[in-house]
Length: 143
Length: 142
Image (cartoon, rainbow over all chains, first blue to last red; front, side, top):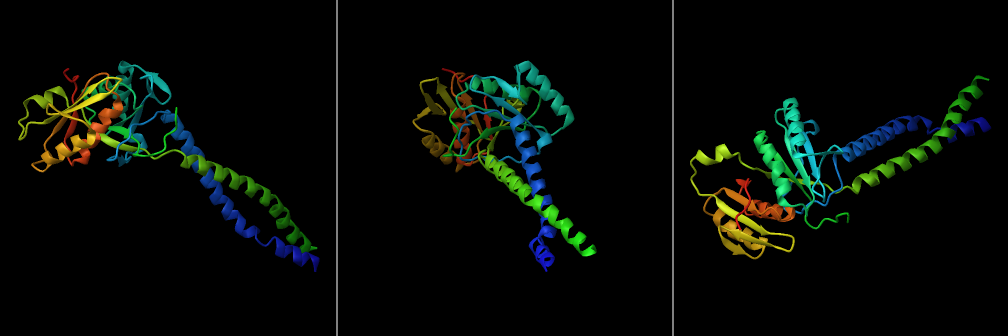
């Protein structure tokens, strides 16, 4: 009699196995995604714009160029000069033909810095240049 | 004998599961919360035309020249030489032009102008419905 009661209590074991499968899958997904985005993205205060479209580029068809408050150009946690950035973009273009360049620049950076990057893209005939913007009225982290 | 073995085995596993699920759910909730704090970013298309292509192709319309001049203290917006006090006014002027046709726009900025204002100028053009917008490769004249 006591044994039968025990069986009833742990009857849910059968349902738990697929649940754990799904939950682990979700955890691994979130861990991978968060690590991936942290590598490409620097903490900058983006300019606001109302007409922005959602990012639609595939990960392997775009390259993110961060420009921080000091005007340093950072790609995947590495600071670049204009010349080395040009070489990097050229190499990336050889890998995928329809390469998009996403410029994530701080809003207070001087225009000449961003224009210089766009000029490099124009010289390399990369005409899919995007400027990353934040939505108007969004709460921004104060840095 | 057979009965006790069958029923004890899954119960022993089930006891460990409860604690594990607690931890796993906690991790899941943690990662989901940290993910949602990252605000979704959007993009604006931006172009600097190559020098060779812009010179000799014939155009139907002379492009509108939007200028942003200034420095750290402030900025001034010009639309074909006319001073605009706000970006809303610039957008209104551009919308009037849009009623004629989708005229190309060239945005010129001085070196010291904050990137934010150049994006606002670009945004105003898109807001007015103009789609052929490009940045000038050269600095705006004083």
